[in-house]
Image 1: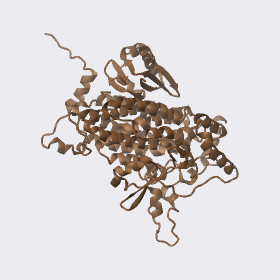
Image 2 (image 1 turned 90 degrees about the vertical axis):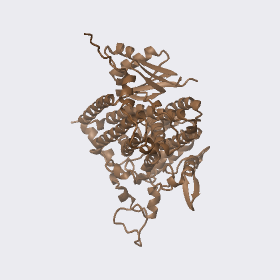
Image 3 (image 1 turned 120 degrees about the horizontal axis):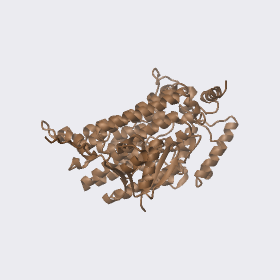
Image 4 (image 1 turned 180 degrees about the vertical axis):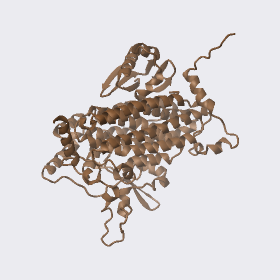
Length: 514
Length: 90
């Protein structure tokens, strides 16, 4: 008798069998009743089977490789802790970049996990459903690994323990929160463009690639492994976002104007969110591998141009904000650091003035702008600090109604003028950081009138710790913001003279001497 | 101007072999070394061939193992059992 040995299936066949072949069309209820959300945004889809994950990753392979990633990651984290790795970072100022990065990112990862599990339920095709489910699990993994990483630093340094409480309440965390709130309350396709394209392709390429390489350069093995392990998933996420855009454009020409509007909107929102990431690279890494401007040129201008050139075949145009972002790359990181430095009592991390050689590095990296606009500000503040008069702005910032960044960026074409826009809607005034944010508002005003801006709400007596009598005769709105934020006083103020600075010096001395 | 397709990996023993394979199969490849990572740019199209990686590593290699070391990619991806292709040429 002849025995037929079954040939091992190839990747493409395996993918088809493990995704599309396991899916079915509903019969008790019509499909459009089971999947109503895909119709709400006006996107027309004719053949869901045309969507294929180019990685052709199946669930069995997914678990295998993700488990391996986790084993590697936790082995490195253990080694880092066993060797007092936190003392091997370049200097204690570096810890503050972790407070900002790890204090703001995990809640966003959690929102992404929620969003993708919703979209995985809402999409009709098996291809996107499986890929979205994997991405949801990935985002949950990032959320967890980042928190494990925080806990290692939290044992030694101040200001890391209230990130979850502060996420919805703190002025500078609102931009990230609003990005995800905006995305998750949109429809499934817009969510995919917001996160899959703008967040992954524009933003994480800068946050998790040059910034994390910078963390490694500063001796932080823990952030390096968490960041790169997350980014190994992001390559898949970017591919999913790009696949979604191509799929919509190929399915029906009527989808073009909708997709174009989303690309315009979310490229801008991603860019705004990047200002603080760029600032981390330019100001908060004691040792630097490249400037934000250089990273932006590689990962957005060149890489973005490659993508938009490719999408031009469908009629997609370069996003409207592209020119403005090129002008702004020379300014936004300096304006952000100035914005944070001037509010030493309002962040659970420390700020400082750059050292002389750091000012020179900035001059070299930003030859067109730094000496002309920003060095004089720093030199003045350094003098003031020496005279015992460290600058401290105690007022509430004003935030943009759409991106919820503080209004601090310059007027296009005029670096000496602050950009400010306003519009009226139903008798109420709303304020914006830019033309692009104003336009986003005007497209969907009913959505953005609901934005919660703590620094504005505080002045209306809405951000008070429990037990505050807002009708008391001596009540001052916003006077107890620190209690509302649950701010650890030890974590705020200038880096010089901080408890973290003293402890780090003491522990490092203990590590090298008997 | 041709756009670059690129790929970046965490730097380790496995990716040293993978990068060697890429350089061999893509004569226009430019390798950029950065702290803890390595990025390879190729104008237009970048291919990773399983057979070449296996030769460099001296063992069997499944292209899906790339997942473990990936940091970022640029270009449209097409992955099969034998080739992992990133391309802006469609």
